[in-house]
Length: 356
Image 1: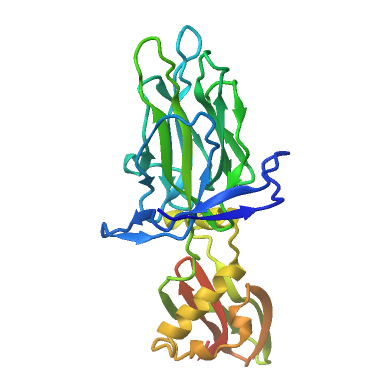
Image 2: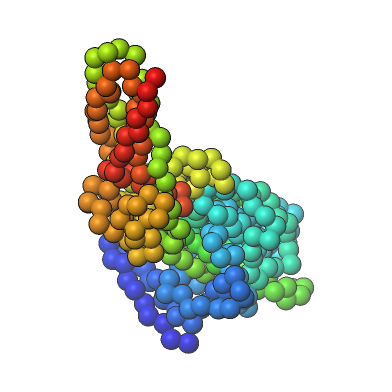
């Protein structure tokens, strides 16, 4: 199995005063993740690793978050140290996968690789409104002839700056490996562990000894959305006087992410912001969707492929004014596009007129 090592030099951790220079991110094109149809597709994302201190244990299988979900929480299986002659520390790591903006985990979205025989599952640590993006495994290594515990605790980086670092409820013994983190607009999506199985009486059992986690690219929110548009009523101005009335309206021009709560709309975008997305980064995908697959709208007659650059910038508020003749009622309409959880305010308006 071939691999390419990518070295990130002089890279300072955002999670404290730990630096992680010259750490390798392993890019393994043979590791694959299943899609919705059960087929497999090659990933170009990289693996983040704990240090291989003990050089023991048997490897488990790679396990993946379901497509469209990423790790947002974790749980440790831990054996107590006190009262145990042969201590093994952490025996398993479970990841909880979720869609962006959801803080609830389905049982079908829990993944774990190889798990040891000792201990019990403890508390779940959640990266609310964010994804897990880095790891640092604590390992205990004793001098020859003494009892090595193996992994004893785990810290995981959270993309949400309000949480930043989650620390498991393992033991406070051993030392942490340097931080390894995913790139921007990536999150952890798979796990692969090495565990030393129980070897019997008078032998040193260590439980979990090493973990690899996969960082997967998160698709641009606007890339694959389905475009649509409509005439949207903006303001109604009624003039009951004989002289003309100046009617003013401040409208949104450009792209914004909607705040609809349906299906966790606003929470989804908050999560996307934590991993490095912005409205600006999503605009290119939205413009491409409208221009390529929508073109001239049947509903509104607007040619989206020929819109000015103002339409494809982050939303700005602009004042528009028109005069309503005496004893008339006029309604201002704007062409507004939608694509997923994005709305696009165009510069195309019309005014309908009626007597009062």
